[in-house]
Length: 178
Image 1: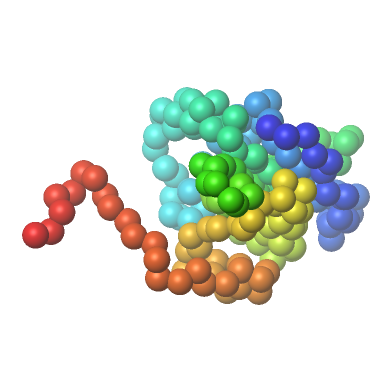
Image 2: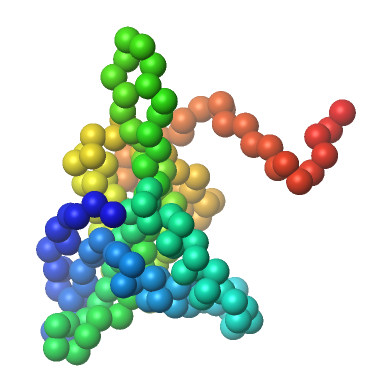
């Protein structure tokens, strides 16, 4: 994963705790898996029984790390330690070169999630700003994403716009209609 500096700490409203956003690395895989599980359970309103999730997540992360940059939002302090509260990642898509054009990578934003208690405290915006800064540094031609219905307004406020009606999807496991 590329080296980048963390966003400057932003004081939180909880005393000396601060919120930081930084690039995650292989040492953060367990924390990312715990955060993903907590987020899924929060969304479903109940514990999710899946004893193999953490191992599956770790395998997925090992496979994805060469082409995906992960950010982790944490709250805490150097003295008390840090607690993960949100994450986002970007897959770098490098297009095939074409004669007469300058190749420019595209970033696909994915898997953005913030625990509900921190969603209204600027954490989603801080994570997205880290992604946008990364895209500018890497000189991506564009950032793309497939927002949920709940997150569309957030991304629109951040400057994302509809990309048209050109996306087609095929689910290979289902037979094609005749």
